[in-house]
Amino acid sequence: MVKDEIGLNDRFDFWNKSVLYVHSRHGDTYTIINQGIIKELRNLVREVYTAKAEQDVVSLAAEFRPDLVLVLLGDTFPIDQVNAIREMGIKTAVWFTDDPYYTDVMTNIAPHYHYVFTQELSCVSYYQLLGCPQVHYLPLAVNTKIFHYQRERKDNFIDVCFMGAGWNNRISLFDEIAPFLSKKNTLIVGSRWDRMRNYHLLSDKIHFGFLSPSASARLMNQSKIVINNHRLYDDTTLFNRNSNKLPALSINPRTFEISACGAFQLSDIRQELPRYYEIGKEIETYTSPSELTEKIDYYINHDEERNTIAQSGYIQTLKSHTYAKRLATLLKLIYG
Image (tube, rainbow, N blue to C red):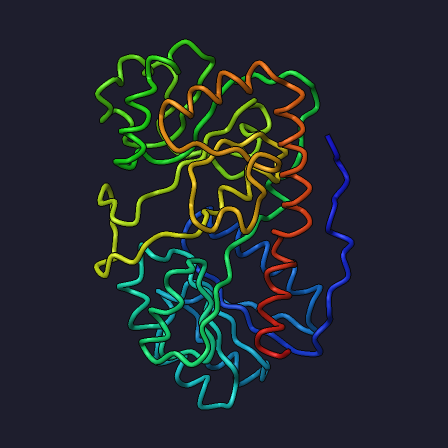
């Protein structure tokens, strides 16, 4: 396994600009996104100021006079503050991170910004139809300080793991493969899994609750195979504010996180997946429960092939899917 921080020494353009970054205030997941963005912004622009969404950002903008105010998600940042910042002649940009499951909320926010970035490709045309002048597809990335290679021993403790809530499609998938997984060293971490019809077969392999990002990274490193399964665009297990039924075409951040840990990943297929990873060489996929179990069986018993694919995915992630790469793209789209 390659352990060098491949890609971290890439040369990026430097912008002689100041940026005021407005934090989202949603849980651990957003904490690591915020940390990744702030760290890499500081390597790309002259000055970085930070603020929380609940602060008086207008006053901070008046004091610091940044060239750009960049807001993550934006659902808790008052629109009147966005408008006031624009009236100062300061460029504004928002990066939506929960599309298409949150577009009903974003609908009222997007038109107030000069630049809209969304991690979901299907939402680009939607925001353009709302009259947003600059809309760009910009997927999330991986914070390599948290999600990184840390396999100190060659053997793994777990054959198969999955981390995530029991969405309806996931319940159906794992119900079907439960007899197979019950005979493997399996660990499932997340909520709502007791809704499974075959829960009794996996009850001793399910950990209810939420793992911290660092604990999630350690689990990925301890697993031979990590299953990735995306939420359906119309899933209603928990809140889903996608009344326009916009499709989910883009991959989730978990895809990048698994590969950044040097773990072997078996993912369901999203339309945009081949844009980021070469299937069969940097990542493996499945299209049905039977194909998933067949590939689990195969790769558990073929260490060299499994590790070669995992290594290639790891290299590609550090080369192309870091926040340094994403923010360089964002700044280039704004400033050229």
